[in-house]
Amino acid sequence: MPMVKKGLLILILLSLIPAVGVKLLAAEKAPLIAILPFDDGSIQNRWWTRYNWDLGKGVTDMLVTELLAQKKFRLVEREMIDKVLQEQNFGARGRVDAGTAAKIGKILGVKYIVIGRITEFTIDTKGGVLGGVGLTVSTARVALDGRLVDTTTAEIIASVRGNGESKQSGLALSLTNLPFIAFGAKDFQESILGKATRAAITDFSGKLTEAVFGNAGGAAAPISGKVAAVSGNKVYLNVGANDGVTVGMVFTISRVIEEVKDPDTGEVIDLITEEVCEVTIGEVKDSSSNGTITAGTGKPQKGDLAVEKQK
Image (cartoon, rainbow, N blue to C red; front, side, top):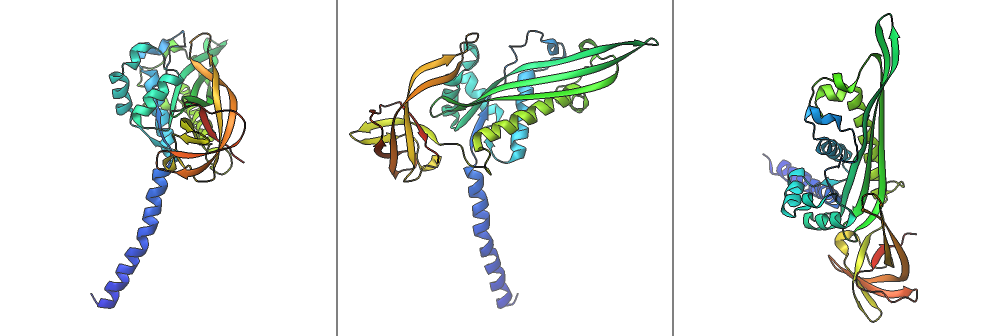
């Protein structure tokens, strides 16, 4: 190959390196999240057990696939999540709440963790008989309820609900004469129950993405962490450059005064907090940052919540 053409080829290849680097960097900045297997114990009529469906894991797998298709998240593989759950014996402790979810998330090394339950998974058939033939309308409904937990603070950032519905007119259809199909298989996906499940997954994943990135063109949700130490007027936080913290950012420091729990399940569903002060960041390291108190009269303490103050 002539020397001129070889040099031109090298220049072209070198020019591609920055573009590739930027693409990889953008992928690395996508939030790493874990989706815990959804719970289906809140539904009394668990009719699907006759088909040997693991409904919680099936729905979770569909949700993971949907979120991966959006290309806005990096997700932890289910095998790794199952291993941590077994090693930490979380399965034997009952339903996971925000506190235990945050512990699992820290072990997995994720920023966010999603816990949820399937609250509806039904087919309702109505109609009558005409000329000896049952003419009916069957309606499948699926509902998912989830909570997005910040593993740094154990704070529930958002509660998300996904709903799906699908209807079919024709011959009578009931839960007792559904074909014996595998959850997630092609036959299931084409059924009204499969379509309702897909609609609920799509609704849920869209709202989850919105909770993390917001509405304004993918703007990131506020950075949150905790106070790690206090020395005079200087406050140290457990979030840093790896979490997106930069010099000049202002964080609102708040103290948890009460946990709000679901009266039926005992799960922590919200936090009652009071504002302590504001801190302006002056120094940032990879996993930590520190700044000075610039507003408020309260005295921050180790363990207080720190949430980025957005304009």
